[in-house]
Image (cartoon, rainbow, N blue to C red; front, side):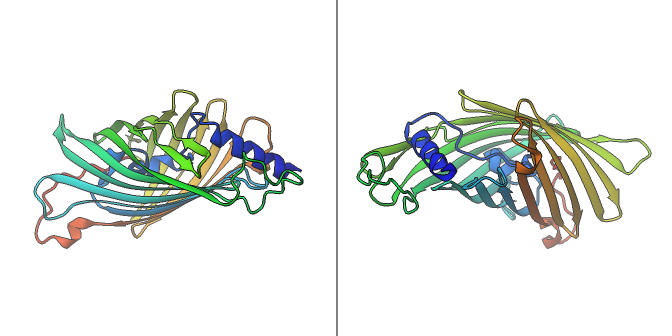
Length: 313
């Protein structure tokens, strides 16, 4: 019965053309700037590979699951600050499967002892509805449901701005700016609302210690709903290793804890998000982040002359 109710809710909610947020939120948002902001391509000034996995509403049948694969990098051996990013996202929500493939380009230049970048995104969204598990009983010909699996796709566009300084960063971006309308079969359609997000962060070294504190925040809205995340992260550096941990508070939504390690250019972190709505601490979200960094400066002969402004990730 619960499964049937969830299927009905997801189906009619999606096909009603409501302006709902299409993109799932990740606990490690502060590590995934190229995903949330096209201007974040090449922000680390190194080639970055990362994967993120989110298992949400643990314990509920047909609960959402999301997987992201991303690569972004400065373009070497080309004069100027040119950067590319590429990513693939797969979301599974009930009987819906959503994919988003995106290509980001960002151009940067030095400004006020920092770095300013403007970015653009070209993307493709694909939505699939699988009705193989629906049991309509005697209403097997209900026209509200597709007679078979329904699939549709549409191009979308995004843009963003980002300013990085040694001690802080601030940015704003919009994705799905053309509000793509994806047709699912002949009778149904799914409208993806534009999603705007604003982000900022700081880097506070603690005097005479190996600790730094990185407060970050992000606000996302589709002009119908909104979400804010405020994070406090502490990083301890020991030789070539960095240990970090902290928490994130999302007003009226959740509290998340995370713990991670960076060594040999590999970053591994785990986070758990607990909802404050009373559904139970055991029904939260599990998030895993795995990243790998390639130092592009190691491929150059002689002194590395580019300005390296590390984003606070």
